[in-house]
Length: 188
Ligand code: SF4
Image 1 (cartoon, protein in one colour):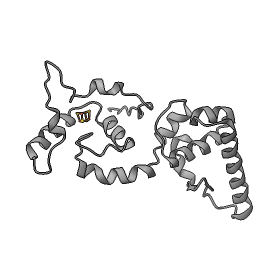
Image 2 (cartoon, rainbow, N blue to C red; image 1 turned 60 degrees about the vertical axis):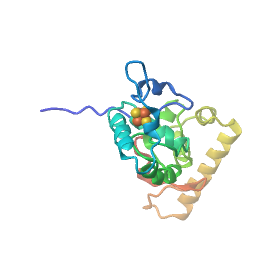
Image 3 (cartoon, rainbow, N blue to C red; image 1 turned 30 degrees about the vertical axis):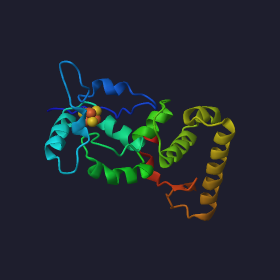
């Protein structure tokens, strides 16, 4: 019987560009790459095909795509996707709720978070008994702000307990984000 090893997601830290040294589109003396192929006109299919072929063998393809989406870099081919293919993803990035990012943050890594992911961090941190000081450090906010977030969460939990039947499993809305019980993934 064979077993499959699933490696946990690894997200780049904010401001980290070191992943680019592994990009196969980095032109070198021994691996010359024409950067123009990554900025093709819509009908330049030869360039698009050449660029996508490089992206297809690039070990940092996912990181490249994440970086482009998080920086709202809408120009050129990134992560194997053309501008047109990436367009809808740019519109969705603000609503991303990736629990591997929540877990990375709780573990102390400084990764890019959407508002929904920041809210999930507050919930998960509260459940795990993370102090307000630590939460402030994790989210790069003031202690006063962290205290306010916990206060709002406690109030929302209390209101839920007062107003909803005991069988209800939904978690309360905090900071405009409503999270379901099972939305916590492994962060809970
Ligand atoms: S995925 Fe494509 S554009 Fe991104 S670093 Fe790799 S080769 Fe370059």
